[in-house]
Amino acid sequence: MNSTMFLERSNVNRVTPEQAEALARTFGVVASEEPHLMPLIRSLLYTPLPPDWSYDGAVFTNAVTGETTEEHPARNYFAQAIDDERERHLLEGNLHMGSALPDSNSQESTNAVAMPPPQSWVEFYGPDDTKYYHDFVTGEERQKPPEVLHLPPVAAVRGE
Image (cartoon, rainbow, N blue to C red; front, top):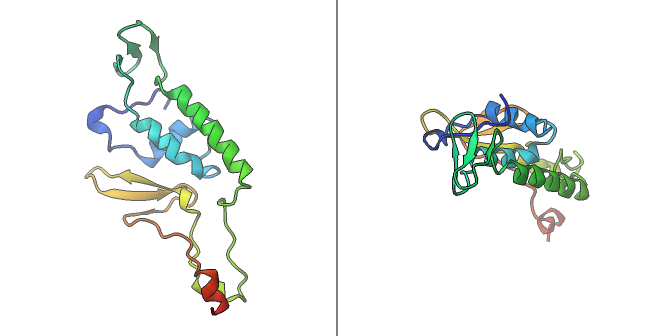
């Protein structure tokens, strides 16, 4: 699959995790290593064409300027958004990439639910329009929204 993937209006709910991963690779994104970027990748698949652009299944054409391209006209915008998100993620110290659970001897650990970071989950729709969630780190799929790591408020842990 090349980077020209584009969904016709009638197929907008038919994006699969595999299609998203294939498009991600064209941006140099490995979904299991940078799952926080997958919502951006998925968004490109759903992005409508700008005014005056059309797609014939092979080439995007601007009816006003006559410009043609094999790339979605919004690709450069998304490439920059991916670069910006990577930078923001690095600046935050990758806090969400594999959050550690509290020490097993602490009271917090008894109330914690170990789940992959929330940004590794992305919403998709099946052939019958049923919503499901895919985790790009573990490959798990589920119908219900994923739970996130839940810790009690600090005051509750201290017994306040």
